[in-house]
Image (cartoon, rainbow, N blue to C red; front, side, top):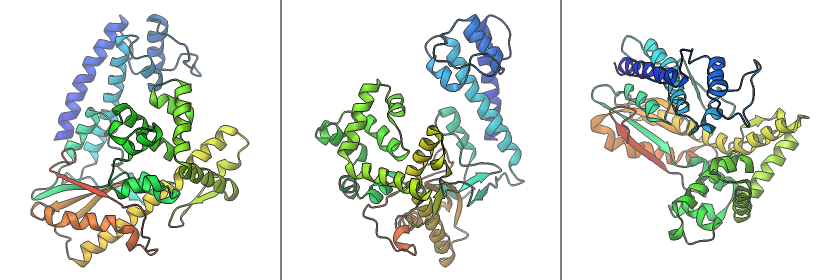
Length: 389
């Protein structure tokens, strides 16, 4: 099987990485022991400890964030990071998934409606919503998820849905118009913040705009922005100020959301679902700040969660009404994506219908909302989840 082959390949790679790490250290030690690794890195190899916190046991931390800051100081760091990634993939995904398939080589995850405070589905036994996608080593695990004979895997994904909902809830005319015109939201935001024509936006300007666009949704402050941008505090502060001066309606919406949460202790999605924030009354400033960040995001991510659940209800009804149960199987939902198995010869016919249902879920809801911002769904097909394009 794909999982077995990958596990064998990654185990062999782990042995090679472990040998290289031990070679750098100059002696045998347990690579998975954080205490022994800390001793090797900071006492024996003398890597810099400035800003590195100590653990309760008294040694320096070897957390991933610490090691990432030390990249370039010694080749052992890259080896350790690669080792940890592979070890997690084997122990958390490859081995458990292989053990959980049934006699037909199928996995049956439990999707929990009330599993996340945001309103999103959660997945367990196994969790199929956190199959890695950040690195190629993680992505290839998706090659193990294949369509049965005669079917294609088809994934439907809400495009930039949280930014669209933010534009809708805040009433920001500029962002709304960009989406109405089908433009590139990150390029458009960069043009406004940097005060240049859209055609003059550089790749770095767009990168910065993308970071703050998504950061804004999660209440990102200047410190987090500085870290994400890889710049100094002054530059991050200037960019932060320019962004919120350029989008006063976004600024006002975020402040109003925080104030509403402070006064009422909860926020509401567009459909009225509440999320409570006891953190807002904490005596500890950092706990209150954490509550404020979560409150900012809750109506946006919560409305997106409501939207996709409504769409899934409509899709299930469409499958039943049209007696498509033999040809169309809705098999997984991952945040803003719904994954189907569809008979190969019917994909081109049925995929546009699924797109239309998902894009019209607001209008078809009991509130019959006509969003100011167009909702867009992208889709792709493949023989495996990895190969969906």
